[in-house]
Amino acid sequence: MTTPPSDTLQGPSAPVASDDATTTEEILLPDIPPLTFDVPESFHALPIAITPEHRAALAEEFVRDLYPNGDDDLWTPAAPYYAALGETMGDQGLAYAAMGLFSIPEGIAHCSFTVAAIESDHPSVDVAANGIREILVRDENNDARWIDLPCGPAVSCVTLRQITISPELTASGEEARLHMGQVQVYVPFSTGPYTAVFTMDTAAVDYWGEFSEMMMAVLRTISFADSDDDAGAAPGAVAGSSTTAEETPERAETTETAG
Image 1 (cartoon, rainbow, N blue to C red):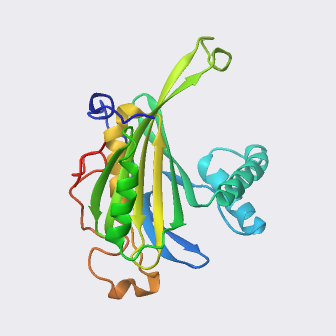
Image 2: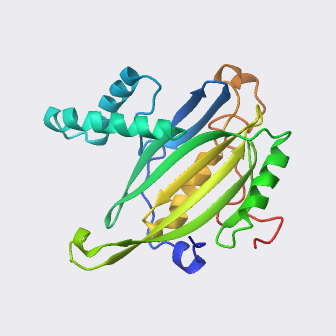
């Protein structure tokens, strides 16, 4: 993987059309403090749940939301597939996963978005963020940068992958190359020894600037406060806060030169 060059992933030619409205997602996992964040309504959350019954119910809602013009002939066979996909993602440690679909002049721009929580056993959020960044900058292909969010410090890592698609899988019958951009942001919990990992992937690299801004908007809403305690939380530390951070993941100032 290589760091996306600025002339490839910055300065997109047209905006990604997304709704101003957002939905608050709350992550509740055993032994892990609560985590909330806001996502655009164009995000379609995959059915990740602990019990099969809950996954099945969420899968039925998901397919109707994803295919609003469908019918039972489409929804009935699709729901078990997405329920199984949600189970697999949950087994891989993901707490939240969604597909983002946005209208663009060429059609639809797609992104995938996931959230995981990993144990980091850090004495402070600054120590955790500095340690994560120190590890990431050892790989010269990583563009790892420190960012300050309303909820505390975080570290972003931007990469670009080139995927080769074999001729038998393309409409032209010729080999094709696909560029995938990824931004991954590590946010240490201020309420326990865990780190939240937010990951966004998209092949719509012409709209990387817009997707990065959308990702930053989500990150600004992260809260580690219990929803019952939000009323007493400090300003800028709750989901949906209007406090903004000055840097986007790919433009954030660093305290050390990568590599």
